[in-house]
Image (cartoon, rainbow, N blue to C red; front, side):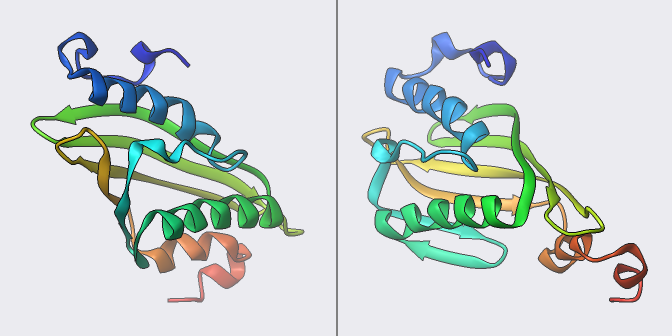
Length: 156
């Protein structure tokens, strides 16, 4: 994937450290279910938030990604993290739009598909100190995709 495919910001106008972080994310995110990411672009006290959890610290951040890979390989036959666009919002914010899609390892071949975006905030050294994931729907509606169709229509 080349930088023009997802960068919606003129990368020539970016500070070098921000540009480097964006390039690393562009490489890391599409393969996060298959291999580990580069943690050098995050502060030791990185704060992570999503609709179901909140963690602080690089060790906990590493555990989140390990858990995603472990459960992804255990429960899915296919799992993808598609990056659509990256938008740098001066002075210190990056937004990455994405889709998670996959096939659950169950006889009825349930599929998961949801969109979201990650908001990364940079400190003065150009490292990410805050990562917030926003999903396009509540977690329960996403989890309903795992159920057989007849069951998922009954669960409210």
